[in-house]
Amino acid sequence: MPKYQPKNSFESPRFCGPRTFMRLPYVEQVNSDMDFIITGIPFDSGQSFRTGARFGPEAIRDFSILLRPYNPEQKINIFDYISGVDYGDLSVVPGYILETYKKIEEGLTPVVNEGIIPISLGGDHSMTLGELRAIAKKHGPVALLQFDAHSDTWDSYFEQKYNHGTVFRRAIEEGLIDVSRSIQIGMRGGLYGIEDLEDAKNLGLALYTTNEYKKLGVERMLEIIHERVGEGPVFLSFDIDFLDPVYAPGTGTPEVSGASIDDALQFVRGLTNIDFVGFDLVEVLPAYDHGQITAAGAANIVYEFITLIALRKKAKEEEALLVKARD
Ligand code: MN
Ligand code: MN
Image (cartoon, rainbow, N blue to C red; front, side, top):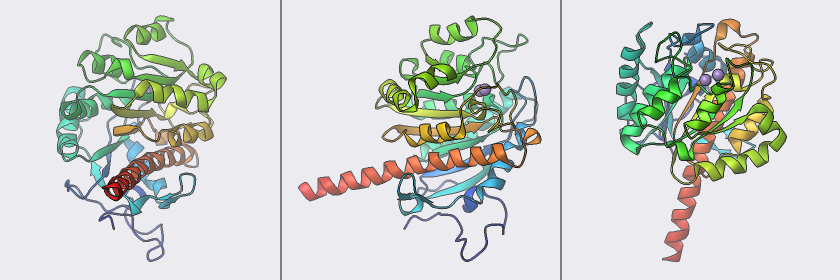
């Protein structure tokens, strides 16, 4: 029986207790019994339009108490196979992005070194650079799988190199991403020029706009993703603005005509048999949310991330049993 699992909601009702993610134990130290941790990164000084994503982690946690351990779509009782905790929030320095990057890297390094998969809740998308620094130190350059209305590969904004619109160009420059295996999906909305998209392709990334994925269909797009990311380590970065503002009004830079929550869940559920070494869910901005719509979508997407970790562990255990039986 995995050590760390959500509180039993038949013993204490869901609405009791502090709001940890999915009612997981709150543990601020790494332990070899953990398969994953959930951590908040409440930093929003990298946002260029609306700010307030520092309150994203708390909003996602608040909705997440409704998540239940059996995932019927994937036919798995998650905590039969894996163990995880709410690691609390990483320290950030409001207004100071370079100092915050150091803190994110320092905060995640012990997690990654212990072989635990970090799932980070944002916060704005600039934070992913700190996460990737910690992850690439252990795994080398990883494939980036990004769902987002924006490519986030500008060179600078207001002549500043570090913010949520430049994060993946910086990550590529720092050698944290294996561009030949990386893919961005969901780009849409007005641009400053076509170079906003061309630049990402020139950096070596595969890029599919929302309209392109809708024409191909989710199933075909999933095949393309699997082919692209291959067998090596992959980081999944999910910007909530991938969703249409109808499903995610609470975000910093909404773009109309996006993905439905159904498509988003179908995408994540289809990402089985991939070697994920980290996940994040960014850009939830509760002040613009209504009736927890955005937080509900975000919490359920994170739930599917956790399910993927459980499915992979289950598959590995079954494979080990088969090998043992053959010997
Ligand atoms: Mn983004
Ligand atoms: Mn975005």
